[in-house]
Amino acid sequence: MSTPEHHTPLIDRLPKVRGKLREGAQLAKVTWFQVGGPADVMFRPADEADLADFLKGKPEDMPVTVIGVGSNLLVRDGGIRGVVIRLGRPFTDVVVKDGAVHAGAGALDLNVAQTAQMNGIAGLEFLSGIPGTIGGALRMNAGAYGTEIKDVLVSATAIDGSGNIHTVTPNEMNMTYRHCGLPEDWIFTSAILRASSGDPEDIAKRMDEIQKARAESQPIKSRTGGSTFANPLPDRAWEVIDAAGCRGLKIGGAQMSEQHCNFMINTGDATALDLEQLGDEVRKRVKEHSGVELRWEIRRIGERLGHSIIGKDA
Image (cartoon, rainbow, N blue to C red; front, side, top):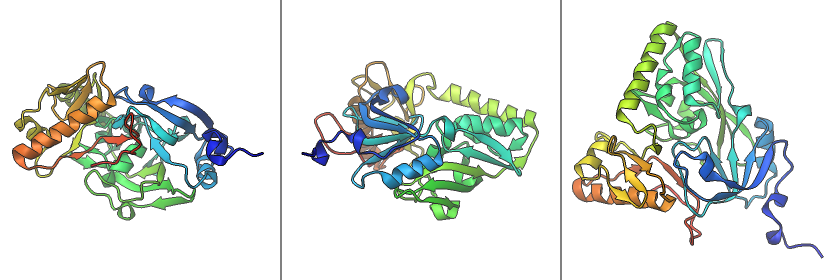
């Protein structure tokens, strides 16, 4: 007698892959906050074709979540159901070709900036101030120091939820402030970034200035997730947070940084719930003080312990 499908282990319902599948992957080990529960299954594809084949062959009801290096990610304490996809080494190449920078979605933003600098390519220095990967930068139109990824993007390659590969331009992606309009189930695999010639020493000097500014203004040595909230233009998030008296505010092991009060930090023993409740409390106090509605920039995903609600940004 056959086993009912819903009693079949999840990993046995997945298509054959050339990459790696692992049950019960501990996501706290791969996120900057170092909190959160496990993934049911983690998939590290061998290459773009392996990822496309997986998406074509997986059960339609199987939830899929994509994570990068976990720099702006809060995984809830109950973990993530279904399959978590993490793009590893096969997606980290950065090459300069025909005057443009071609980067895999798993490439660190800093590595892209450094490759450009070594090749005398200017205009990508701002990436050295953004923690995370190119894939994450595309998904949220990341930016820093006056430049956003859409300003330097020629095109991106992405795979939709059915395994079809697309090449799209910034206009087709409907990129606005900290937002990309492509469907949530599209997975970026690479990007081409426009560039201009520059002097490597001048570019390196600008990158050094960015790194120094970050070190002076942000708690980069703490367990943090970068900017917690998007700037509520024309205001800046840290200003309305500070005005509402939330600098240094604590809940459990979570605290709004004294150094930069739009950064949440895990002081050592925070749970994901501590961090999320702190963020929600800050949003509440800012709304009451100034009427400003802060929007989470940190991506919050997974299930709370004792709950079955998959998180969605507010």
